[in-house]
Length: 277
Image (cartoon, rainbow, N blue to C red):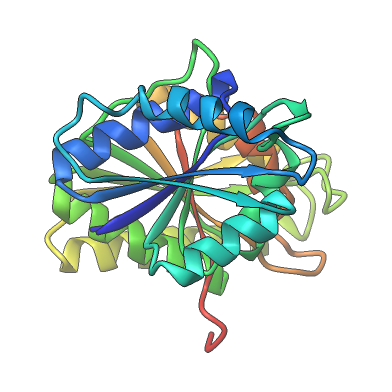
């Protein structure tokens, strides 16, 4: 699926969790892992080299090609530039890191990379409750029918085909921001109808590709329902678009994706639609 993955690191726990997971993927798929450490101009060379060496230890035991690199500058800019310069197919990052001398990564940097990267970004939390299993057997795809959600579905179906995995397509009717407090609200029927059409179309596309798929429509807070549904079906991966539909009838994504990155109990693969879409 991917040939070259980039793993930015600052030596923190979440960054190491991402590095370890990336190492497992690289080893199993025999792809190249680029390990990037971004430092500021005040960081001593010896300190930077030590951090990079510590990071490399996480994946030295895998049977795959590993390329170490150090760059100076703003982390998000350096990560995106490195990805573009080296033909990176996907970026693997942790969600929280340390900031200070020589430690400039993750947290808000991850969210900035997610919003701006042209390639998928696999976000891995370092918390103990996070399931980090590979290969993937169950993939959850939240969808609101936006172009970014469609791009995420396309990526999820390709992964499912590669892993012989089951895809769950979930549409959440987020009644809170729409001002709908009761299911009897006159607008709810239209939202429900749209949500059902979104998941039905997605399942039809999956079945046409020969992929096992399950549809679901849920009600409530978007990120909470995605997370709880993922736990219910024991998902190994959540694949989400980086942006969602706009306007009062918005069903999901956008800010929900960012909240998922901070709270998900599985790795989250974020996908941004191409500029052509």
